[in-house]
Image (tube, rainbow, N blue to C red):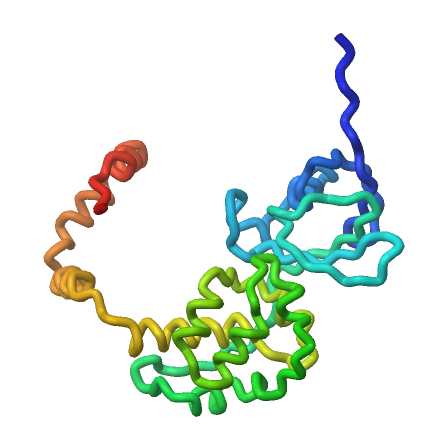
Length: 228
């Protein structure tokens, strides 16, 4: 029986032309083309945000974004990857700041320069309503900002398209930290376990575990009792 011929797609990676199987993701297509990926491929099996990619389709001027691990190639795709995007990350002590609206003004005042263009939302590969969670951050509604940004993978695609220079992932991270530290009910059993670990109660068990072979550790993990 004759082997079915694979459908191919013509793509351009950093300006160089390649013909690759049309069913591949951008990440797989780059490897098919001979690229050895050492950065920007942290997960391979989900979302980690390490393979942010910008691309255009021949015949269109729209600049699109996606994650290389989950975006399929298209014929006439021009690709450039972003191993990281230089987000502005302010330094602060979560134990000293207060859960008040003013903290955003002090640390990330650029969010108040948002022009409402919604480019951040359109760029998000996780399809988050990015502009809306920034609006919550502006109002000091950290719980809603944290909830709406929960699936952010810090890829920076939103910030790469923002004319106001907002570091959306870092703003969202601050909101989630404030929400977890000050607004959400604390889990007492978790606090108790942290105290046990800090007191050294688990040290002997940890040291014993570290001496076990990897296969044994995997077996213990896969057969562990899972709380319902």
